Image 1 (cartoon, helix red, strand yellow):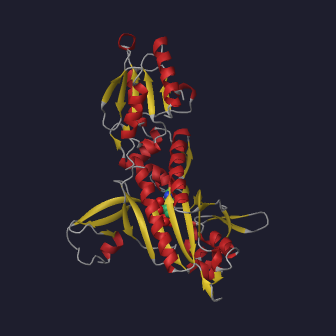
Image 2 (image 1 turned 120 degrees about the vertical axis):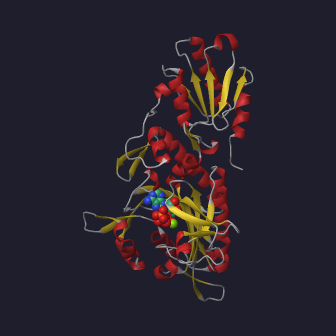
Image 3 (image 1 turned 180 degrees about the vertical axis):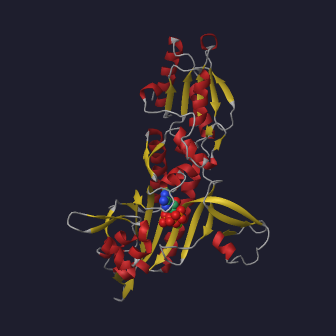
Length: 421
Ligand code: ATP
Ligand code: MG
């Protein structure tokens, strides 16, 4: 892709009101744009990152045995009244009335809908187990939308729901999902902690949160410096920390995932029952597993940036390489950039060519701000040296490469920039 033909632009300053590093960087790189408070558009760079994150999640969900579905955002409020969650969600739920006077809501989550589907499907133990997942837009009228897409009113979630015949089945799937989450966040280069959590309005008895440490994180965890045990703010306040009331490290974090053992909570009310081998009626045991897909972008940026901009882990970078041609009036330089772009694309490397007629300083600043793993400069001395300058955004190391070796050099350096364990 050539910058001059793209819908890519950068801002020198973030608009007023951006409260965190990731929010500022997402606005300065125009990954997202606010429509109204808590509602964002994804522009090409942001959309590319979102797609890469989604694809990693999709692969790992399928690997864990889940099947993809797409459930409706519009849901009857009546269904929520059956589980009592209409009142529980209260004003968080965005409500609409259609022309027939039907009361609908824009789904804040999908336990009710998916459980109702299962109720129409499950008859016998032979229909179990199964796990469904979707990657879809959720709506929550948040009291305080903040930090851009960290807490917005319309956001993208991956939600999965497992259906098993008994506790042992549920325990097995819960463990599989926990491992899938570890792989997902690992592949994105995200550091995270896992904490036992309160099940909140979702319910159930066992639940774990996946927390990405970040300075701007709204959640607070305490880690015992002696035994590394993790506690939520609530645990610490209610002195739920057995032996660790001293020497606690305070950690700010963003909740990026949350998994729950719901057991029979929804299945009982909405009638997901089956006949076992002995012909006895049993209640299906459910689990649910959420990931804040859009929140992952700021979480990754919070952990991967410096004073100059973003430092993308390769697996989620919008492009892997930025080619900077310093003098676009020089046809030899332009031709070298065009050829290198073709060669890299053929080798499976994604490239943005900065072909703007701008000063070198401006282009280097933008390359740092956008933070693709590698920058290749075709400099002023190109005519004499015929050497590309390949610079690693994270380590800032620079390698000179001749035309015949540059593709191999880039591939090798990108392997190093993978950061996915
Ligand atoms: P929070 O405590 O941050 O409000 P939650 O516990 O209400 O989140 P869940 O119902 O567990 O959220 O949703 C699953 C995931 O969706 C969360 O772990 C989080 O990453 C993400 N998420 C929840 N609310 C929002 C929001 N308003 N904007 C963006 N992502 C969100
Ligand atoms: Mg949660």
